[in-house]
Image (tube, chains in turn blue, yellow):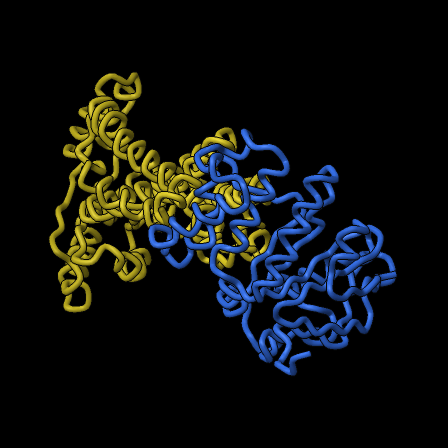
Length: 220
Length: 305
């Protein structure tokens, strides 16, 4: 075990949804997590147990109702939304469930989207092509999302998440809509990414994926 | 890719929400046309006031032998009484306010009346004696009429002192009411336009919520995400205000200068193209303000990232 500061640290996180005309609903209460580089942590639990909510809070997309999120030792609480957004750009790669792509853009253009806000599309095009190759969808680079299968779309979305060499990869249910063979190859891929030094936080209820992780928390 | 992407998104949004965009354009167009018409009407009123107030006189009517109103007792005003009024007009207390005055005798009044009502059967019933003799006074400043009314109405042999601006004020009151109505309609339509633009932006954002989600995930800034939606609203409002500007120019060119000026045969100057050209930039500025207001509503309510 290394003693380096966690890449992402959640302390005492509470996530509460306000409901009109009803008591607020506490999805998550007092959750702690220290995610370290080179390790894969799995958030396990049934649907609706708050896996995605924790991912979104950890990615700085939503502020927690209580508790604190820190990236590489820096608390997000004091940062403005725009500052968080800018930091997220090359710190966190986020792969949402189903791997949503922008219609009308090719696979390559979709993979290059994170480079758009920083105007780096031209410089990063070789890396995007390389990622698509490595993920097995290089030959589909010029195809549009409606011409891709579910698995291919997810790989393009993964290439997009990895484009800016993030320190953390957050993945929501990557195997949910895949057959066993494709799912297992995604699990291998995540394991090898972790082995390369990326911190991987994955939400899943797929037992293979839960078992493949270095550590896991099960949400009620 | 960045600018191209934004413009592409704008074009996409416009295509997807075509019917909403058209309704935004129409509502902006109509509301701004009302704004423009109200401004033109105010300009017209201003021009007419300048023209007619200069020509408006104060008339001091002297008694005839049939009058019972005013200070009259069914006796014709005497030469002495007329001379008294005349000396008042030339006195040091009134003379400074008066540009010029003339005395109109029974015969002159009759001649004017016959000329004015030449085609009317009334002309046959009137005799010179029934028409008042009068002083026609042009004031240096038409709004000083009250001073004349005050100092002359009490004199013997004076039937009535009348400020002709009173007639004009009625006309201007009608025109003013018309322009306030136009402004009222315009304000209501502008409110509708703001809400409509905001709703269009919301619909547009809703139909692209997946793409918006992706752009958030990849760390696109608020401004980057909001710009296409705001541009959509600005585009629609701009088209509407340009149409309104064209309508105002057309109204002045074909209705006011073409139809009204030939039909009315008036000596009054009517608003012209040079006035319309002043109104157009105002409409475009109002249109831009409209779009900005609508966008800020939309951003604060629907595009919070």
